[in-house]
Length: 112
Length: 114
Image (spheres, rainbow over the protein chains, first blue to last red):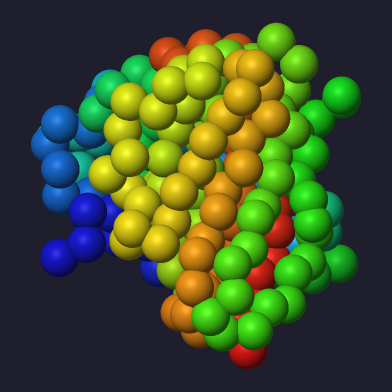
């Protein structure tokens, strides 16, 4: 079993839809959870960062962490065509970016 | 510079040749990271630097891979005797310090070994 599992999709939704992306993990030592967005032929950019369990909201984006279930989610409200990208979850047992363990990414397309 | 710069952006090399990939981190960032992204795979951690020191090299896939950083700035990732399985996008990131999760990625070097 891989440390981090993420459904690669692809996921296609109409503009304005609520998008739910998620990852599961097996390493109970993970404490720091991140979501990155990667446009085609670009480097990943950090979207959300959460520590331990709980929710975090930033504009149209909400990140949720459920450590008891080893499950994290990213919700995108009022999705826009510009949200079309690959979304990568990442996590680490330490506070730094070193040894971030990434999911394979979910490719999202938002259709106008 | 304004962001993390990687060169070359694309590299095609023959199997068995050596290649050198370069990363210019954001000015003032002390931590620098190398990742590899293969088709259909997630990002795979290779190595990180704190200053010029690489405390953890365990992610390097084989002894054909090496990396160095000089002057606390530019880093080079060298792959010797390239193999076809080395074909991937090599991503570099930097952050202000090692415990800073705000890591900024470059656009990567797309390496193709033919």
